[in-house]
Image 1 (cartoon, one colour):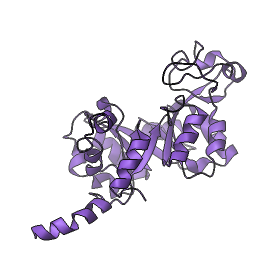
Image 2 (cartoon, rainbow, N blue to C red):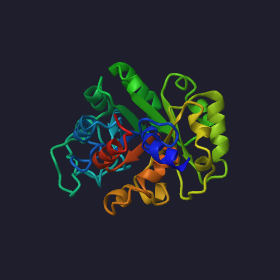
Image 3 (tube, rainbow, N blue to C red):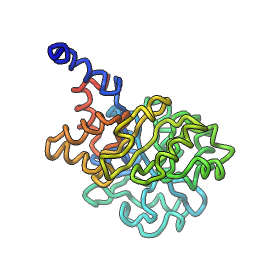
Length: 285
C-alpha cells in the first residue's frame, strides 16, 4: 500500500488535495512591482503575465465618476492631496501616480471604464474591492462596456444586508462574500449565502489555523463555490504569506499550506513567482 501511495503521489499533487487541477491567481492592485499600484499599466502587465484576476479598488470623484483608488485620499499614491471627492475627473487626471519607490510617474488615476475597456475580451476577471457603496454606478459601467461577466463584486456583509441594499442587482452580478473566519458567526453567514445564491467564491481571512473551514473545505467547494485565500500579508492568513514563500524560500508553510487547505484562488502581491510555483506543481496549464 505504501508503494502505491508513493507511485500515485505525483498524480495526487497534480490533481490537488481536493481534486483541483488549477489554482487561480489574483494580482493584488495589479502588477504593482513593475507599475504604480492601481494603474492601468499595472492591470495590463498582470493580464499579460497570465493571471486569472486583477484586484482593484473603487472610489468616486466630485462629479460622480468611478475611479481606481485604494485609500480615502490620494496623498500616498499620487503627487496630489485630498479625497477623490474633492476633485472632478478632469482635475484628478492631472495628478501622477507614484511607483513603488515613491517617485511620481506619468501614469494618471484610471477610471473603472478605462480599465474594463482595456481588459475587455481578455481571459482575466476584475475583482472590485471597496465597491460596496458604488454597486449601482459600477453595474452601469459594466453594462455600458459589455464587461459584466468579467467583474466580481464583493463585500463583507451578510446576505440579508446585501439584498436589502441592492435587491435589483443581487441576481445580475457575479458576487463573492468576504468572511472573517475568526468571528463566531462566520459559519452562519456562509450558510445564509449558500441558501440563497451560489457565490463565485468565498474570500476567507483568518488569524488561526484551527478554523472549521480547514477541517472541511468541501463545506464551500461542494456547493460550487471556490475558496479564495489571501497570501498577501501575514495578518490575513496567520503567517502563510508571500514573503515567507519568496524571501525565505519556504513555500511549504505558505502557498503550499494554503492550497492544501482548499484554496482555489490565491490573491497575491507576487503574481510572477506564484504563477511559476503553480506551474511547477502542475496546478496551472
